[in-house]
Length: 464
Image (tube, rainbow, N blue to C red; front, side, top):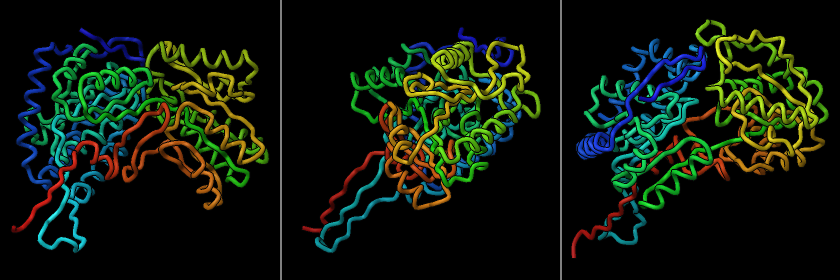
């Protein structure tokens, strides 16, 4: 039976049973049955279910948030905020726009008065969501809620480290009155996932995880079936502080984007480029922001950064940092400013490095930990070239007091989302997507409904 080891104290906090092939097949059959009935339910009732699900989850929020903390290490306050500030916000927005996103598209150009033409969006059937551990509520919410609103059923598989969150979400839907089988937690190993793909009965698959994992899932789907696939993969997101940027606010925003969730965000800022005119002032402000972080036991009130998810993640972050330092980088933050707990080996000090180059892994490969490199640049053109010099393209941010300049720079950047004077945020009204090795597909916004539905065209002659 798989066991989850907590990065908080190194002890087992949860064990769960992996589904047998027959049990997984039974859940798939229940999902199909539930979906056929659910597709006939009025959209207003689907909206009411999703809104009630939020209320039911909130009733258990204290227990749910603590479980998330113990499974993956984020401060309890952040786990609570992930629900009330993110999961809830996105669910309510999707409920608000569902009618417009799913409306039939009437074709009325006046050319054929005897013929009615329109396009409807039908549910794809059963949607499988494979969710990452770093934001176990925020990662799946877009696809799960859009699917339920569209008339699909959902099979939800979380990464091992946060497997319990799939059960939390299933329970919230059931407590809200969802039909049995509509949203189900699926505790599967790789063979179990392949078994579902072998069935050729899925309508869409959403995957969030590593580039390597995404390639394997994508190949597995392509070898078996022709269904839609969404991939949210790695990131190495850059920020550029322009010569006219408001330095203090930029440093505060970028520090938060780099170190929130111990740097374990798909869209965390991992590379910072600063115009020479403001470099020294920015670096001083950035270091002060980082030194203000409180690293510690995430169960303790006031902790702003907990441990990374496991020992392997801690080793990876340390190795990248040590490689950079050996190659000439300089650490400008002071580890002694942080009271690092000895509860487990997963607690790391947040670090800012200068003297970094694109020859170093810390500026090229995803870190997913509390380290960020800062480089001085001489011009906007140099910054854009360096920002685009990456295998990844999830988000990028530009920090400037000139809106026209911000837009002009944004248009030159290769990423799914570009921010000005903000970073590390998912706006539910916008499409969440990536380019290059950050993946493809869409969640959130009206476009997020398109991937979990299929267009069906109607060409109806009224009379002969």
